[in-house]
Image 1 (cartoon, helix red, strand yellow):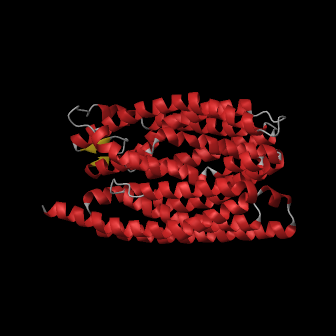
Image 2 (image 1 turned 30 degrees about the vertical axis):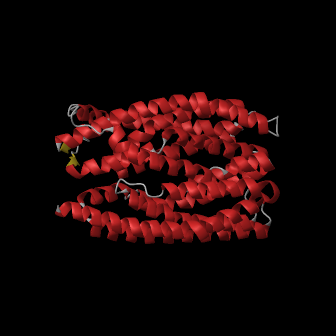
Image 3 (image 1 turned 180 degrees about the vertical axis):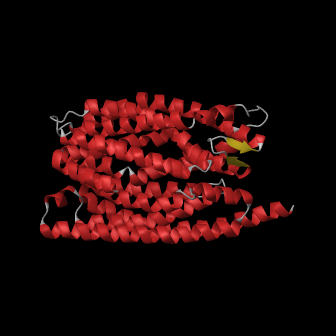
Amino acid sequence: MLAALVTLWLITRHLSTSEQGFYYTFASIIGLQIVFELGMSNVVMQFASHEMARLSWRPDHILEGDEKAQSRLYSLFSLIARWYGVIAVLIIFVILPAGYYFFGKNAVAPSIAWEAAWTWLIVATAVNILLTPVFAMLEGCGHVTQIARLRMVQGIGGSIVCWGMLASGAGLLAMPAMSSVMAVIGLCWLCLSYTRFFKALGTHYFSTNKIDWKTEIWPLQWRIAISWLSGYFIFQFFVPVLFAYRGAIEAGQMGMSLSIVSAISTIAIAWVNTKAPQFGRLAALQHFHELDSLFFRILKQSTVVIVLGALCLLFIKLFLLHADHPLNARIMPLLPFVLLLLTTIVNHIVFGLAIYLRSYKEEPFMFFSLTMALLIAAASLLLTKRFGANGMMIAYFCLTLGIGLIWACWIFKTKRLEWQATKKGEQIV
């Protein structure tokens, strides 16, 4: 979070308001990669965590235990390697030209050289996407701390390079440089720490013991895919819409505001995300009392964290506004900023409920996510041109609180009781 604050400060110092708009719109367009990923990384983590109920780690990073579980894990790794290889190719051949079309059509500042930065960013993103499922699988296998440590190192290394690029006047090239450093760190870490793991896992593979994509993964994946695609329209849609309707400056204000708020959201949801593999293992073992006790305790703690973080950001915004600080002009006005903070708190609770229910290898939030995405996207398209960020955030808050939270709590209550009763019934039989 500290690194993000330094990055935000350097962006305001070394990028113009229009360049800031390009910077954050880059990030939003890159989010289209979820169209190809289809929620696979989340599915990988859930399946790996269930197989780990019968496995354990040796000190030398090699799994031991049930042979069938190891064979199924290796088949999962083989599947995701092929899947994400195709995704990397699609990112280059679909998102790269899509970005050229979008920015070429809507660019209002022809003096900004964005082409090289966009091309480099796409290539770096394609490399990073290849690492995503491997990290998800290792998290599912219980190495949450190791992956968190890696991401911390990636964040530090990438941020230092980004700061150097911004301070040296490299402009938009700072973003792809940061992404490239993170990819290099991730590749080196995997080669140094887990080469023996993947080699050893392959020796336990039998074609009769494998995870079948069509019958096991796809029924869960297509539902998560719709939820993830819906999430893009809920969280990444705002900046491109503002860029198209109101210009790069307002898009930059929205992008920086989302980046600031996302920092506290990421920290708070880490309380829940880091327990997701443990949720999956407890669900597989049908230890429901322990699962519920852990989840509700973690959700309360994380909610306190995000509320305190939101209050801190609100005080900072009020200080910048009162002092008439130049940084105040780089983020949204007070009303939409406050509404964004409130909506983020509500969304945090919804995210937590969804993470819990997915530990049962089910996705009950598909229709919910799709409906909310359509409502929020429609409201954004209808209100943004006339009312800008104010109309967009008012609609976002009202829909999320008035429909989203109530609906999500109902889904959580009914499905949790239903699935636990079903699992207990199966155990008795």
